[in-house]
Amino acid sequence: MSRLTNLVLPGSTTYDRYVLRQLLVALASVTGGLAALIWLIQSLHFITLVVDRGLSLFGFLWLTGLLVPSFIAVILPITTFIVVQFVYTRLDGDRELTVLRATGRSPFALARPALIVALLSIMLCYLLNVWILPASFRAFEQREFAIRNRIAAFLLQDGVFTRVSPDLTVYVRKRDPNGVLHGILIDDARDKHSHATILAETGRLIQVHHQPRVLLLNGSREQIDRQTGRLDILTFSQNVIDLSQQSHAAAERDKDISEMSLSQLLHPSGPYLTHDIPKMIVEANKRLATPLTAGSLALVALVAVLTGRFRRHGGVLRPLGAVLVVMLLLALQLALPNIAARNPSLVPLIWAEAVLPGLICLWLLFHEPLATWLRQRLRPNRAHPA
Image (cartoon, rainbow, N blue to C red; front, top):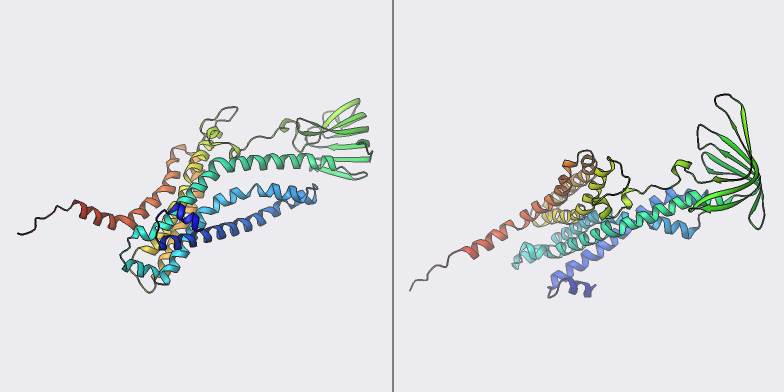
């Protein structure tokens, strides 16, 4: 830790290293703890893949672990605010800030360790938003899609009706060691207009374009003609049936906006619908703007602790006001992308919400020292009397 503080603060004072060490340790601990808690809660949604789909423990940990970067990107600005607020409030409560002010330290010198931590949080958020998150979302969606569409199909048990999906049930009487299936029955209701029952003497599981298929030999397809009410029977010597959860019209997985890179969002190409382009523009601006929220929230905490005169109840009222301001900013952060997607002219509000609070806090923190410094620099030198 001392090497890190010396790296980011060359020639730093003992106070800078002391506070920065506390901020970095607290930030790593709080962010890691909250990310682990959120991961534990969210991973419960994927327990069904272990129970119903036979997913291994390693596969479960790998799948849910791909979500961790998204948790960190969301909570890092919040934990930065919490850590700065807590550490500086403790320093103020122990009268350490009062002593440092008495030695002539400027507000900027007092705030410097927190500003460095805020800058590190912003850089990490940019790394997550621009590069890591799209890759992790893409890997997660591909992995989950493959698991939901393949594992159940390749774990068909002898003499058991296996529900591959809510609209697809497969029964196999016997499976040979070489993979040949005997006595196959498939109830296919994925197409609501042609509910079919398929029978086959033998078959084999195969993959076509990474999708599960079953090759059926010597069988028949039976379905009711909705117009005449008669039973139509079609016999075949060989047929291939899709066992994926999607219907035949949706066999390929559509790429989600969260999986796209920043260049794809800013320069959309391909068969995107018109109503998708505003969402892509909003997503690109959101990725570029939201990391700056970490700096704004850290500055809100600094304003709550470093401004104003000391009062007996000031240690409670100012931090409480800062918490209310942060809650308001987070609510705006959630609402503005949805509003901007419906009205693209409001996209600048996303940037205003991320940057404007920080600029206001910078003015509140440093306008008086800056004005004093300017007056001293611009004051004309008076001639001394002889």
